[in-house]
Amino acid sequence: MHGGLVRLREILEGLNPSEKKVAEYVLAHPERMIELSVAQLAEASGASQAAIIRLCKSMGVKGYQDLKLKVAGDLRETGGVQGYQEIRPQDSIATIVQHVSNNNIQAIHDTVKILDLEQVSKAVEALHQAKRIYFFGIGASNLIGQDAQQKFLRINRTCFCFADPHVQLASAVTLTEEDVAVGISYSGETKEVIAALKAAQQNGAVTIGITKYGSTTLAQYTDIPLCISSTENEIRSGAMSSRITQLNVIDILYLGVASNNYEQSVMYLDRSRQAIRELANGMAKLNHKS
Image 1 (spheres, helix red, strand yellow):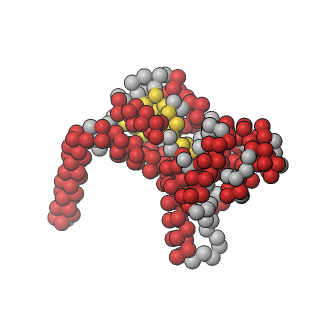
Image 2 (cartoon, rainbow, N blue to C red):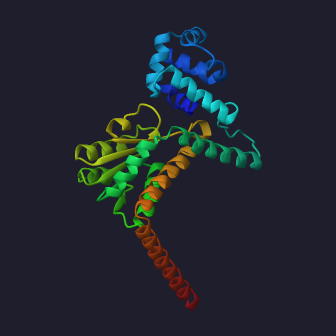
Image 3 (cartoon, rainbow, N blue to C red):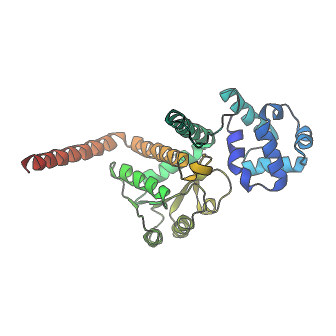
């Protein structure tokens, strides 16, 4: 029972003003909040009890007591709220190394808190059964798709990742109910990815979305949502820690599919390693001769 603070932070900017008051109070005073009743929290935050109930629904928790349990779990786990650290002007290399590494670790840790294991299982099963797998992403998210394509190809899964958004959309309209489309967008608002996933869903494909927690446009066209956490602010807005969490989710899916047919996966991995080794040896001999 944890992840309450992560969920609040992820959906904060999309909340209406009254719900936002409650969320900001909880994030600022989590230790105090877990001792308050609904009425007391409403008074302390300057919002209404109805706003608290609506906030719980926006978060996807069962109710106020469930929210309190998740926040209490966060506090027991960390001893307090651990925040992301910004890189500041004139920071030393030692500070940058520490902050970047801590932020990436924090993002993965927070994502684990909000990942729905049932949805992960559904995603692994859908990918395992898929005739073809398509990864859709733009910019940094496309690099995640390329990494996924490389991994799944090595265990003999037919998969594609195109950099051109027009090709992505053209391929999406050819998908069938035997295929799976994976949309990757931290914001959940990337127009090209939304268009591709919408087309894939309309043609019967199972759609998986790797995006931030909360209500997004991408989620409307996602059959299996896999939510990640990463606060991208200021200089970190260049898809830094979000990229790490997306890669982590891809690794989870890849290993989940590989473990479903472990012996065969190992066989194909050995074949690809051997082929690459032979290629490298051949290239080395050619360079030596030249």
